[in-house]
Each structure stands twice: as structure tokens, then as C-alpha cells.
Image (cartoon, rainbow, N blue to C red):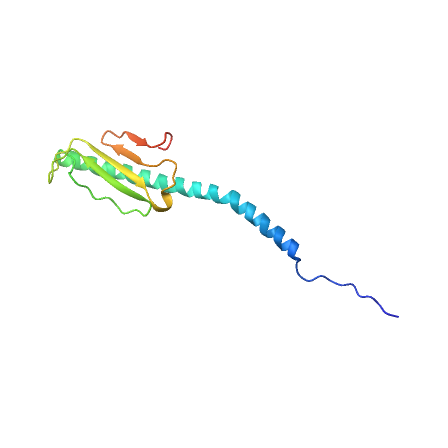
Length: 132
């Protein structure tokens, strides 16, 4: 008399693997935009802090010598490029106004806020409201 042994399955079927891959794909499609947005907000907050720090440096310069410099060097950033405009004459520190503007680049280029700027009176602006 033959005894039948129960067959114990080892591993997964192709259908089970495809279902798992589909679930992972759906989770990825939902999570990636949220993660990207969170990272961009974090980088934006960092650059806003840098803008305010550089504004404070320029204000100390103004207090010390009575004007804003014609040129100004900013820290390097992988995600933003800096622009500095002033009414100072070339080679002098006699400016009474300045504007610092940062433009997103690289991985930050798709940031919804776009360009951020601040001037000598502390007025902050962005391409989109509610970004400061």
C-alpha cells in the first residue's frame, strides 16, 4: 500500500511575486512626491536661513563703514545660485540699498517657490506667496 506524503510548498509563485511588486510600485508612486516635496522644503528653509545670515553680515558692514559693498561673496550651494545687486559705485562701499536673490538649481529647480529674495529693509519676497 502506498502512502501519500503531503507536499510542502517551497517558495512563492510568480503571481504572488507580481502582486508584491505591484504593491511596492504603488507605495513608491505615492511616497516619492511627498518625500521630494519634504526635501525641497527643508532645503528652502536652509537657504532662507543663509539669506538672513548674509543680510545680517551686510548690515554689520553698513554700520561699520556707512554703506553696503559693491560686491559680496556668498557661500556655495548645490541647490541655489546667489545674486547680489546694490546701488554702490564700483570698488566702493557706499551703497544705501541691496537685494539678495537666490534662484533654485539642480535638484531644487522644480521647487514651487522659485526665486527667493530679501533686501536691506528686510522685505522678503518669493515667486509664490506663503513661501517665507
